[in-house]
Length: 254
Image 1 (cartoon, rainbow, N blue to C red):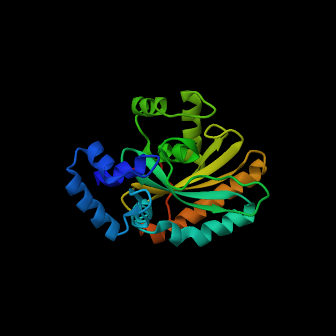
Image 2 (image 1 turned 30 degrees about the vertical axis):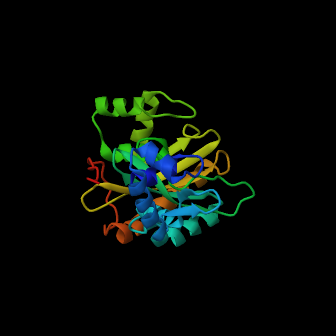
Image 3 (image 1 turned 120 degrees about the vertical axis):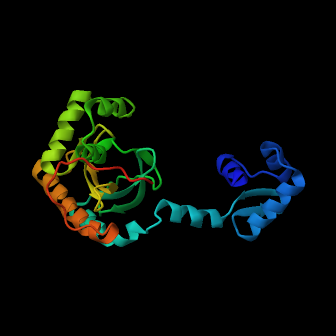
């Protein structure tokens, strides 16, 4: 594992002696481990430079770790329908440990200009539109919410009072809204997916350029996402359609 982590962090392939020296391993032991990893295609060996780099086996494992339940492949057709209908992008987020979420899938609609997000990017679970929607469900104590808010980074900062007001609005509307705070010039609406215990497991965010749609259409997109999360929840977490509630929701013990 130390060898794989090292090869994932360096900018160029390394030889066996350099790897052994960096990790304080005996060169002979390091060589045997590298050969075993090479056999399983977790590392690649360049015969010309006598150096090692990450192999395709690591990619396959990383993809499965990103989305172990293959959630995105399950909901992708539905998300693509909405993305195409409105010319927007839609992301599927998975809640992971330490109060963070990771982007596990991305659907794009037909448009001359496109918004791109990197699969695998991780952000705090209270940031952006999905963050406001998550906060509305979690219903955290005020002091805990403030501590979490102070650790968030925004491209266009907003005050804590404004954030609280937008969280309250998310409670009323059923979706979170971010207008240029997470990313300038971008408007996002988002809805969480919770399981039968009330734990937030996933989130769906609709991403568009600010001004691309009128407010009424943005609201309609949000309603489409709410319907999509009800549809997705039955397939991803075995949950029946949502009930209107602002009760406190638990974090998954992942």
